[in-house]
Image 1 (cartoon, one colour):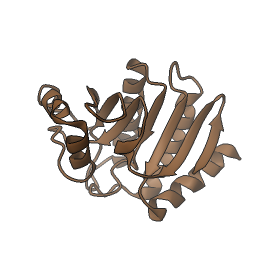
Image 2: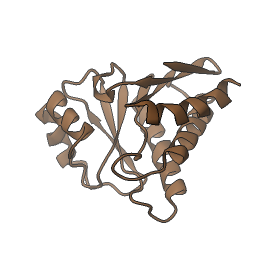
Image 3: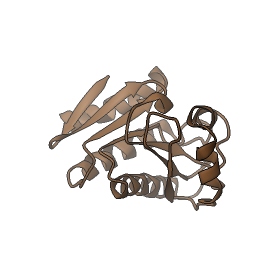
Length: 176
């Protein structure tokens, strides 16, 4: 685990399964139709139970860059922020990813979340470059925490060393 302090708030980098974290909100990099799909989508569907899927049926579809909040069912989180980011080397990937992250943070604030967990946004199946994601996520979260109304802790939850290292490097810039 790596921790960076921003003002009186904290950014933590951990390895693990985001669906097992006890946080106010967790971010899920969602499909525009909000179907849960495979990977963490399957984990949310199974661990969260049928209420999550049922709620998503009335929230979608969602445009690229947008985010919506649902309950988290039986997960340890209170909410899931379903963020629809860019996919497969779309035009303006950086701006779209930036908008997606900022809208996720806005949703967390509107829900009154004190803790939020982000995955590496779109770096797996959707092909978002890991260096781009780590730079934007750490930069935008750090800036946001300086003026946050409710957020006190942001967790970046990665699965392996390949994902961990770029985020560690970016966090080291925050801590100096």
